[in-house]
Length: 291
Image (cartoon, rainbow, N blue to C red; front, side):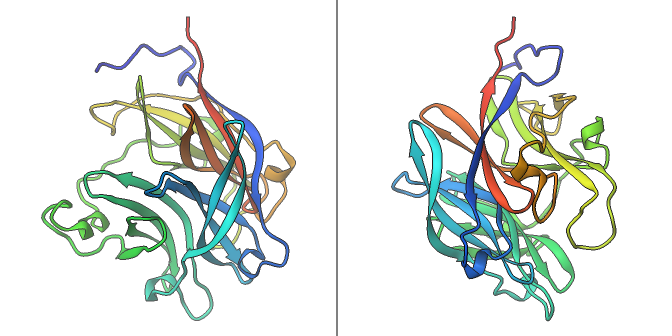
């Protein structure tokens, strides 16, 4: 299917902020420093789940699970249901820090598994890692990336953790992403191709692994070629969502909007995102009608 014509302004989609979906529960040990940057998915029975990064004292992160409560066709809150991934492996912890952070998940039907990419904060600092699950609760670690190569993913799922044949897709181009850009949720198939919601960073980065307090994270989007996702067809010259709400401007890392998950509810797409590294927000994703 050839890409549809695009509007002159770039990507014909918009994000509309709907508010806070999940904040740290007072007195909860594993949420002492916030909940943020979630993954998401549906269990075999069709229930929609959020997998938030939960930060305990000392900046130690776990991946939790919470049912997304829906009211009038919109996410309206969550029901917590425990922890599904903790920093138990050697590459996820060190003597003075540790964590499993910023999960992203996608269901791969041909493999029959949810695939999670996450950041393992281990002895060598933050490194990408991969895990798989059939039910969003029991996760099998495949290890840090790169890991053991295999001839084909269909023969050995561990090949998911081996990076090869990768190439550069995009670099910073506009002011709101001048410092760096990063991928958000798994790309969404739309009529124009693949819609990739991403984050863009402006400001000044400081050295180290701690919170960055002199930068601004906003959400943008790109359209990728449906037959060659490494080719960018269009991108948003200005943010689709930027840190303007109080919960996005004040927190553990101020001025942050960090999109990490997309789900469909009754035909409507919703984007879930981290707010100032402290809470989780939700926004509706809509296509703008073009002339």
